[in-house]
Length: 401
Image (cartoon, rainbow, N blue to C red; front, top):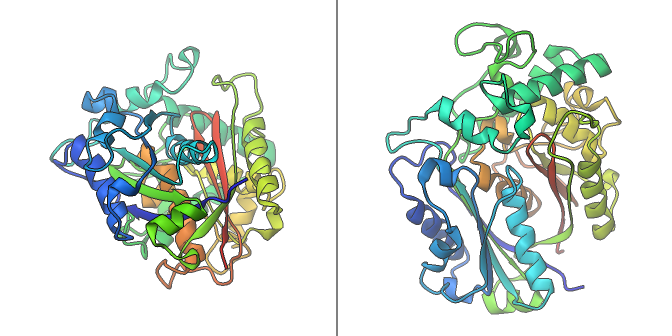
C-alpha cells in the first residue's frame, strides 16, 4: 500500500469568525493551507470539505461546490463530508481512500464551523437544538440541551461504575485550560481556571442538568473556526516540492460506527471506538506503549478520561486517574490534548478532527510552542468521535526520519 504523508496543516484561531461568510471561510482554508507550503491549489488532485451545523445555521449546502470555486480546484473529485463531530477526521480519511484507489497523489481536506453571528454572538438554544439532530430521536424528548444531557448521563455512569469523583474529572479541564494558555490558536487562551474554580458552583460555572454532575467547565466550547490539511503520496510530495523530512506519515487509521442510540449499549466501553483505534495501531505496526503524544475528543471531561482508555494508555476505568496522576500533562508519560483540547482550544465541529491530527503532526515536527512541546515522541495518536460515542475516527502518525 502506498504511504500517505501529511504535507501541510493550517488553521484559523478558534473562537469567532465574525462576519466572514461560508464561501470565504472555505476559500481561506484552502488558499491559506496551500500557501503554507507555497503551492497553488491547482496541484490538488482530490478534495473533501466538512461541516455539521452549516445547513441549519447558515442555510448553505453543497459545500463541495464552494471548495471547487477556489481557483484551480474546479473539475476535481471533491465531496462534502458529514459524520457529526467526527466529520474532520472523516474528511482526511476520505482523501486517503481516494488516493489509495489511484485517483490522485495530493489531497486537500477542509473542515469548518460557523456557529456565531456576524457580531460573534450565539443563539445557545438554537445551537443546542441543531447539535441534537446528531442524536437518536427517541433520546431527545425532555432534554433542553441534548448532548450535554446525554454526556452528563455518561459522566454519572462513569463516576458510579469506577468510583471516580467530580474533582478527578474537573482536573482534566484545569490541565487543558493551562495548555491553551500557550496555544496561540486556542479560543480560551486568555482564560485560566483553578481546580477550586472548576468545582465551585458560582458565576458561569453551574450544573448543566439538574441532578447530574456535569458542570460548565466540564464542557467544550461553542466555536467558529476552520482548518485545512494537505496529504500526499511519495509522488505527491515530489509534485509539491515538499521534503519528506518536513512531513509526518499518516501511518495508520481506523473508522468504525456504533449504534446511534446510547441506551442499551456499553458507552463506557464503546466497541467501535476501540475497534477503530486498534485497527489504526495494527495498520501502523505499533502498540499503545509506543504512543508518546495524543489528542482525544474531549467534548466533555469524561471523554478525556474515556479517551485515555481507548488509546490504551490507561486500563478500563482508570482514565481519570491517568490525568489526575499527571501522566497526561506535558512532561507526563503520554501528554494528551496539549493543544488545550476541545474544552479550551475550542470545538468548531467540522474542523475538530483535522485540527487534532494537525496538532499531533506539529508535535512530531517540533512546531508547537516550547511550553507545550513533547520531547522525543516517536508516535502520535488521535481519537475523534461523533454523536454519543457513535462514530469514531482514529489515526496514528509517525515521523518520516
